Image (cartoon, rainbow, N blue to C red):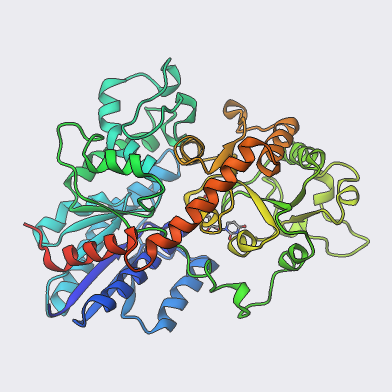
Amino acid sequence: MGENKLVLLPSPAVGHIITMVEMGKLLFRRHSDTSAAHFSITILLPGPASAPAVDACINSVEASGLDIEFRRLPRVDPPTDNDGPEDFTSLLMQKLMPHVKYAVADIQRLSAAPVAALIVDFYATGALDFTRELGVPCYVYFTTSAAFLALMLYLPTLHENFPMEFEEMEEAVHIPGVCPILPLSMPAPFMSKKSGRYTCFVHHGRRFCELDGIIINTFAELQPETLRAVEKGLCVPGRWMPPVFPVGTVLASHVDGGGASNGRLRRHECLAWLDEQPAGSVVFLCFGSRGSFEAVQVAEMAKGLERSGHRFLWALRVASLKEAELVMRQPEEPSRLEEVLPKGFTERTKGRGMVLVSWAPQADILAHLAVRGFVTHCGWNSCLESLWFGVPMLGWPLYAEQHLNAVVMAEDMGVALRLEVEREKGNWVGAEELERGVGKLMGEGEEGRRVRAKAKEMMAASRRAGEEGGSSFVTMKKLLVELLTKRAP
Ligand code: UDP
């Protein structure tokens, strides 16, 4: 087959970069099992996006000896006419396109053979404007749930048929292959149709039909009906539907045995605390890289957790306070955390609860036998990690597409329960509601048992999918054959 070269383009969010890099590593491994022909990957990094987790991910690739190189794209002036983070990313990726085109053409010129494919983030469909011209097939790597993929594909149709705001719709929204979604569970950026946050999704959803394929971080057994509807083209009536490749679960490399748990790094103190708790007794609360709460909500959460009577490990970020302000510096100088927690809370929950104000080693925590349930914001990486370790969830969605993920995890996948989240009050959850939800998740009632059994089933399925002969393994091979034999028309 000669030289095989792939180019990957993530968008600059930490979660998007890491999973794209890991997907590249998986492609590399599968290729080595399949063919001895030379194979290399170039990952284009948009701007100086830097975070400890991204740096660690890049370093791990550089140390691995895999033929994966990084190339930083030149800096462009950030967009200023955006309404929110989603259209900011979309506009930024569009501004970068001339540089992406130059980089792909340059790689093509320097290597002996044409680039086999360009795989881009879902915010970067602008690449389609030049890939045909360069003779390079273009794929999207979709970093979140199949339900959100179905919605993005269906959005142009919904947009034409229902011009009113989702909030004004009296009935649930019907997306092919997805359970009915109440208007208030639609993704946060879709709540105002006039905003650039919404229109950028209509735009990219429409362009998905021009792609050569969509690679997605899920596995066939987790969302079978949704994937079937998407593959059959039910979400794009009257238009051509590109092939879909579910290749998940793609996890960050530290998740499965590469992190603190393998002894390379100092073990986090919360893991020692978990060692002292009985098996299957702790509820873990963590809300992604951006989830933070106002002080009044924090006090309410503390009340709910205390009243639940369950052991808890709580990764907490307070909106108005910096991490440094929450850490106790001197015994005589209490941290400001005590100001937001109810009086006496720390004393009363001593031994059965731990509050963490630093970055939590989430994957190691979910892997720990003491953990029985996970209260999550329903970011897709968190959902996949939780299922990888067979931990059932209680959804408390906050931003992006998390409200949709929460519904489908409960209704379609059966791996989560949901909290009654008062969205119009800034995703407020009262103490009683948290107490009720945690009680159900952790308890021996019918609902708790059901999600616990389903999460265990999906743990086995997610691991099997990636093994030789498993659904994602086979799909990844199919994808590779297609990537290495196909050229854009
Ligand atoms: N994460 C972590 N510790 C934290 C918060 C987050 O390790 O205190 C990790 C988590 O394991 C996951 C990622 O950060 O891999 C969050 O990604 P997700 O898609 O769930 O949410 P986002 O941060 O993109 O909203």
